[in-house]
Image (cartoon, rainbow, N blue to C red; front, side, top):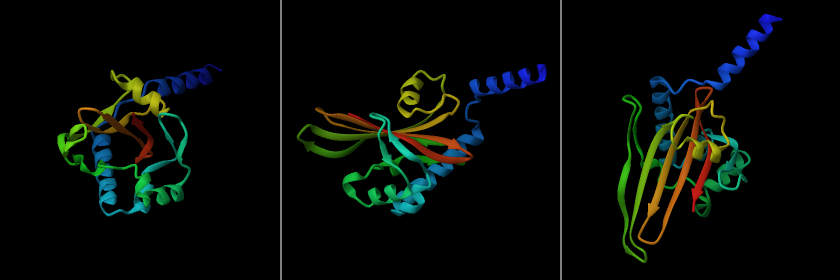
Length: 183
């Protein structure tokens, strides 16, 4: 009986205290993210669909965006539903683990709301990070899973909007587990 209780407590404590991404994990995430970006550039919907965890839910309203890869491929081909805008512009180096964020890239000069800019950031998030509650709450992911979050922000003098792509490394495979857009 003691052995069973010990094993249960051990299993429970392992679920509560997850280890953060190792340097090897981070390099694997960036390697696979780079592969995802290449699939985006080639417009290879089938390859891209392998990086999505189905059903993919909208982090705002918890509705399903894509039930399966067929839904994804159909939407990918429709420019009105295109979710992955500018995601391929984040610079990552999987060998060094380096992420080069895009800061204040001019998209349009002199529009209705002034000059239009874009920023893209990529970062690793653990449950102990200050902003973790936002990402874990939006994605519905267990705090045992570390996250790789890519944020694409587009703004001018009148409007500011951001898209959040929340990924995990599951079974050594990068998976998009939630997509959130504000406002």
